[in-house]
Image (tube, rainbow, N blue to C red; front, side):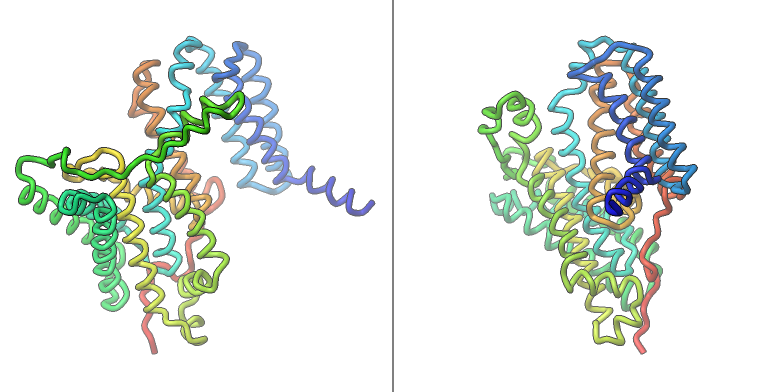
Length: 401
């Protein structure tokens, strides 16, 4: 009897109310989109009010963060559903396809690699603004290595090598020379931009010979088409993705496991929270931080390699276009946890993927749609929807005594 009462209290608690509000908000938008495409003005208003009521209930019971999330979901769900009412059903069918989800995964892949790298570095206490430069170096040397060797595997190895070396430079300045970590990160970005631009114009003055680039192959899964009812959809989403997309999934899972389920992860988190205590029990603060920063460079370089030999098959100057900074925003949005940071990269990826068909089919400004993930990130960073609390010792050089 007591167990049943306890369970009932949990189901009526503020967090449960907020989850219900978020679910109803998502349902509001989903019902207005394919395959349902419900045409009713009353539906968005009714479900939006219900979702908002759940959010207000969570706020009234003291869970401010979860309640605000529910209210945001109610507003976005109802607004999106009302917008869908004015769009032709055929246009919605052309926008919301399996290809849209596949594009979301492709756009999210380089961000996820860099975000996982940023989590390792910042969990150890080292701010890594240099993710952008490490991605750019990875993109260039992946192309150079694949052309030089004729193998995409060598291209990936070259990207990881030079990304790790650039991260080591950042580590030396930030850890041993105790330079300002943000300034060091920006210096790394400028170094990468200048170095890759110089090497690109020197080695390939006529442009990249795309025919000579060995690209990362795609993993085809034709058996997905045989799945009853949803086979075509599953194949459209997962049936023809690059191997690096699947490697990204593995890296996200492995990052969580290493950080939170192994002694290595405990050491990384300990030097990021209380390096003096970690040093007292025999943990090498410098060693752990160097290793974490180098790993961040390797992972960020894999993200850059995806852009060059996994997606476009070429290289252009500054081709990362700020993706390293977006990945850093995903780290903050995800509160330095791999799972939530990956969700944030999916949000960014969906914004980028959705902008293209919306502009083509519904004449909605691509720039307007692309701002949505950034607005949500600003809200999260500002602490309106749960404050993002970084590791306690992040950005502070450690002086061994």
